[in-house]
Image (cartoon, rainbow, N blue to C red; front, side, top):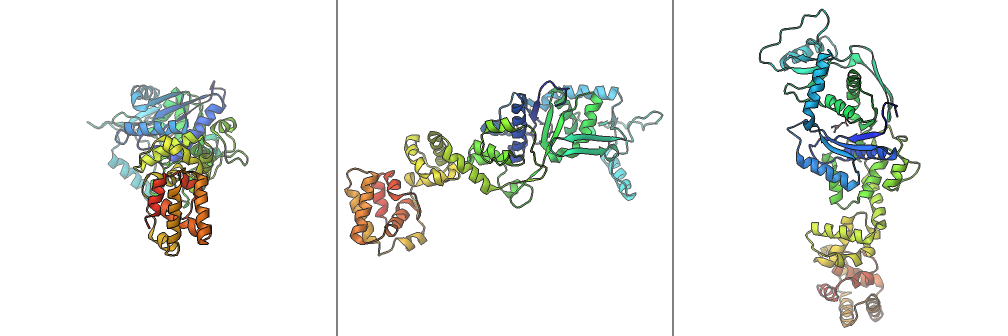
Length: 467
Ligand code: GLU
């Protein structure tokens, strides 16, 4: 860390134009873990200068997702739109110092400028026509045109930084032009507001997606123009979908809270996101606390990460098996409610242990539990294949024996199954599979006596008789 900062401070700066995207969640996680590792602070800043697309609902969703993941922040949410006076003051200071200037060029003029540059085979860059220079005669400001403000970028020389992720990056100032830092309506642009904010908020380390690499030279120049200490930058490579294309809404869920709704656990999501671009030896399964103790900014990957739903399921399945059963049951109650099945914790809790080993998600667990609380609908194929005329007498016999049980217990059910097998000469699967089809709506379950024990006796009898 550079000595200009007295402690590590990181931030996440989402634009509230939708839910918390998986990529932003990963950036938030790394920023949070880095701050926590160093005993520093983590700030939530809401970049809401795109007024038309920003909503409070998005802010609420972003905060809900951060809370769900357990990414606690020490300051914020700080809203950029509440800081307009501050940006305005800094812009005026830059103009007064000759480091920024008004530009009255119209969109049509700029189009014509770029057209001419293209015709000459040049890079299309703003030609600095409104930039004051010693001895230069500026055009007369047109009547009634509100100017934008441009930053007077250095015209030459290199901008270099040692990226925490990508290593040394150098861009020549001839490659970039005089950036607009305030629009005609006075609202600052991203590249300017972000610098003033990072400066005011004493951000020591900026982690963000690598789509911002190209913005960093401008930002560094603005930091320098302001005499502000330069944070370290770390640009995280993009996350690719399992089809090798950029992860996007069109290719499956990209919202963190969609995963919550679909029965993923926050500790699994955190663990999985952590590994998307960072490693600690061969460790695949670890807690947030372990990650914090390891996350020192090293071992960040330069290459794109690949979203792997099967691996996420594996990680999630690990935590489904591991977490406290009461919590698991509470989550299953919520999942069942989402499927329109209202149940109590008392009804669900005794059953989760029987199925959790088989479940990658709480939604899958709810899928198992539903058979206890809602009608099952065995498929026609399963009925035809397993509930055959040959087995019907045995099913009737089993139903009779089960009906005769005075105590509905696993051992009693097991005895009824055994007696039926002995009397009919069938093998266990020949009897158990049709019972599963009729009672559970599927051909495979954990041990049948254990599964049946959790039903009400009457429900089992009714379903057995529904042949
Ligand atoms: N609002 C920007 C984004 O969501 C923040 C970029 C930054 O962290 O500087 O991409």
